[in-house]
Amino acid sequence: MTTRFPAVRLLGAAAAVAAAAGILYGCASAPSASEEAALTARTIAIMKASFRPKGQAGLDRLDQDETQRLCSQYAGGKLPESIVKKIEQENLAAVKYPADGKLVGDWKEGEKIAELGRGKQFSDDPAKPNGANCYACHQLSPKEEAYGTIGPSLYRFGRKHGYTEETRRYAWAKVYDAEAFSACTNMPRFGQHDILTEQQIRDVVALLVDPASPVNQ
Amino acid sequence: MPSIHSLRLIVGVAAIAAATLAGSAFAQTTLENASAKYRQDLADGNPADLWVARGQEMWKEPRGPRKVSFESCDLGLGPGVVKGAYAQLPRWFADAGRVMDLETRLVWCMVNQQGYTHADATKQTFGNGSRHRSDLEALTAYVAKQSDGVKMNVSLADPHVREMYDVGKKAFFYRAGTHDFACATCHAADDLRIRLQYLPNLTEPAGAQKAYTTWPAYRVAQGETRTFQWRLHDCFRQQRFPDLIYGSDLSIALTTYLAASANGAVYAGPGIKL
Picture 1 (cartoon, rainbow over the protein chains, first blue to last red):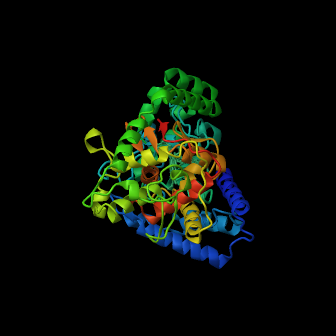
Picture 2 (picture 1 turned 120 degrees about the vertical axis):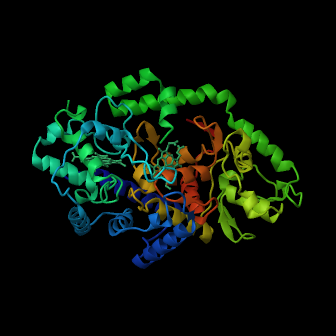
Picture 3 (picture 1 turned 30 degrees about the vertical axis):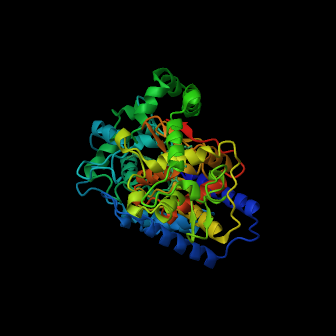
């Protein structure tokens, strides 16, 4: 179930830039590990001095967890297999399933959450519920034409994966923490980072796996 | 991402229906055709020209407590020289001891030559309707216009500029925040969209060139002419990062990375964007 190709694409693009920069500006050799570390430290120092807190977005938004740190570190090259394993294992271990075992909610509510772009921006009202904006990146219900293409189409997700307990658990975990299945994916970790509540994740899971959901027609 | 609504209006129902039937590759083309047509329609009268004209007047008039005009402001090619100035920025300024983009340099001249306080100079960095127009947006549009037709040539020979380029590139791939986003999440692959908004691949010369050489730009949805500082500020908002400080070193580093990536392309702004 692992889809790693967007990450690969991203790394490929980064490598191409590095190569192009080398040709244009005549870097004879790749920077050493200590030069890289110094550049990273300098970049972080500059970043920290370049923002002010606004609304709900404090300066702590710039602090990286281990997954973010590793994904940034390897963004210019190839992600080693050992790092892939480490990131996926740590994130899988962080997935919390609901205490009552109920994984599937109401797909109609899920559809609204998938449509809503609000949430976590400094311009958003933190008192209002967050959306997930799944449509920013995915095709889901065919009725919504304004979908993005950063992620794969999820049309007929439930049909394709089968209406089983295993699919429901996978859908839950994927929405909760996408890094558990594809290290350095471009998909946010909606549960892990408190973007969605437990009930909202249930509703989004329903949109994916309920046989009555428009996604599965 | 609110501009989706205006986008929809412009593209029209027929185009969307066709795009849906034929899948995403076609949707992309349709969307681009529609916006290309829109730009063509407005080509004779880019509303950004109003900002350019306002900026031109401001450039010549004595301003600030010291009543000094921008004609003593050196953008890198000598005091008052605007022709081609935007196409060679950012650069190192020894008098300020900093690498600066155009907008930061304008603020520096306002403070150090015209006598404004920094707070006054940066009170209205981005306009907010006709009662709160931004002088900086107008001045930037005017100066940028004087590079229309000039090849981008940002030099990385100076080590300070080179460092800013390297920092900007590093920052481009820096993932953090609630959504794990970096600039690269949205701008490091070809032919992607968020909803129906086309995302340029800024890590490739072609993508960076096309994007950089058309800013500042009149934003149809906002009725304002926006600058590159605004563009970065608003992408960081979508990235769920805090408030990017106008003229901060990070803003200059990212501008240096993208402007130098656009080297060789002919500057063609101010543009028009949905």
